[in-house]
Length: 111
Length: 109
Image (cartoon, rainbow over the protein chains, first blue to last red):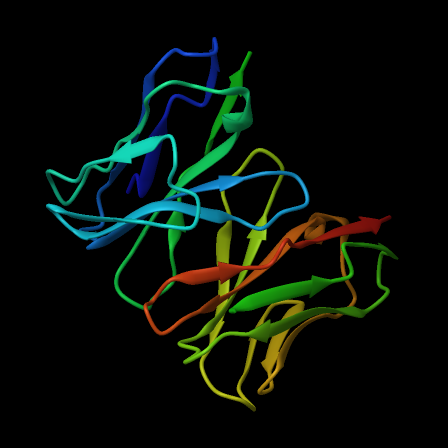
């Protein structure tokens, strides 16, 4: 039972580069979300999806894009990386109003 | 504005020394108060959900309680393996989670 799988675990980007963070879940959850976690701050919601084909912005969406073509996958795209996007990124999935299951995280450094 | 505040930011205890972590919340239409544990380099791991004031849940040395304004995570006779960051989050009326910044708990042997 894999749960929520995120790749890669670590990534270093140069300013201006683009990349995609992958997230897959095998629990048939309709709700998936992306968070960033910075020191001294709570998890902040970037984008979320309530089902395939449906996405919406969270608290800090600027500089990120998402899509949800299948129930299982919810990739996060950084369009043009900036140092302010240095953070740890977590993907989570859940059924509505139940506990969320998190991936192991991606530690991203933008130089 | 919905808000969740955790205190203290960090807590150092001796093994066996019981204490409590606080989570104060202002979340309109609260649809559950969630507690998670996060170990370094890992994603948050679910512990408890509380839905109504007066509700309590227990798991090993941990007990979570809920009032209309606060939730407490009580740790009884902690062990070094209980060292982690504990996060709480309130579910709002849109089923979004509003997160606190966490309490880093260190248990010294």
